[in-house]
Image 1 (spheres, rainbow, N blue to C red):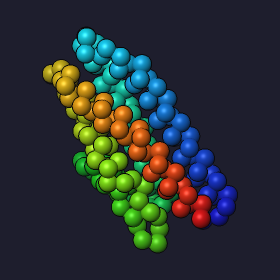
Image 2 (cartoon, rainbow, N blue to C red):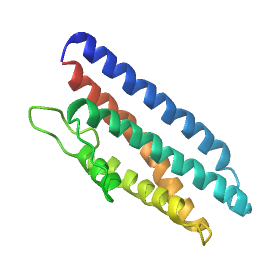
Image 3 (cartoon, rainbow, N blue to C red):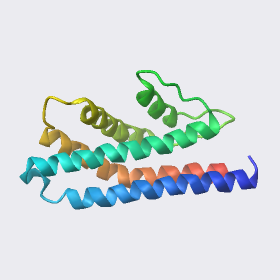
Length: 154
């Protein structure tokens, strides 16, 4: 990878990370007293859904750049997340640690539920559990991205 390609890739990744940060700010605002009304639970659930979608966009950028292969099958969301946990020898290191992957997988499951649950309401306890995972994820993902970008530069 040329120096210019590396700088472009890093810039694109950092731009997506900025979008993730903006969603975390929205989550922080919506998480205050969210258990008091169903509307607040839905609002927080929606932002958690958006958070996973923003992470997924980050994963697509990495996959497009290194693997150039994202299949559109029923399980591509799960497969894309799993790809980010693995190292592809001679191509790239893993983007995600196991702990980051596990927290993201909970977020992915809520995203799926949010998108496909037309006939029932979000469970407040489930949203709270995923919210806590998202907070833990905030501590983890930044280290993973920085580690990953450091290897791309070298």
